[in-house]
Image (cartoon, rainbow, N blue to C red; front, side, top):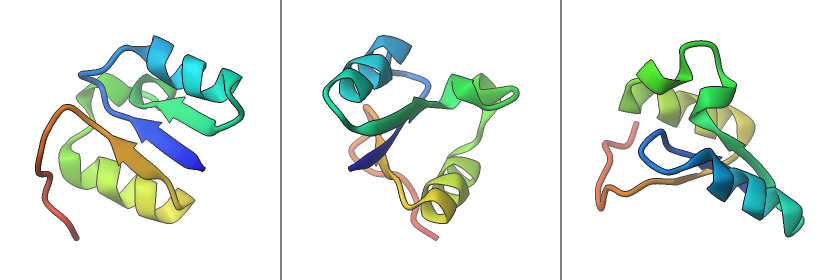
Length: 62
């Protein structure tokens, strides 16, 4: 599985998932990643075919 971990969650989560064999990155991996808007995160996730892990129960879909 490929994951994109949202800013509100710790980068350690992405590291943990990677250590278990998943292709996982945290939003802070990207330049100014802590400032990415939801729509930008969705674009990245779709482009890279990643599932977004977030604390929010709903994020807008595009």
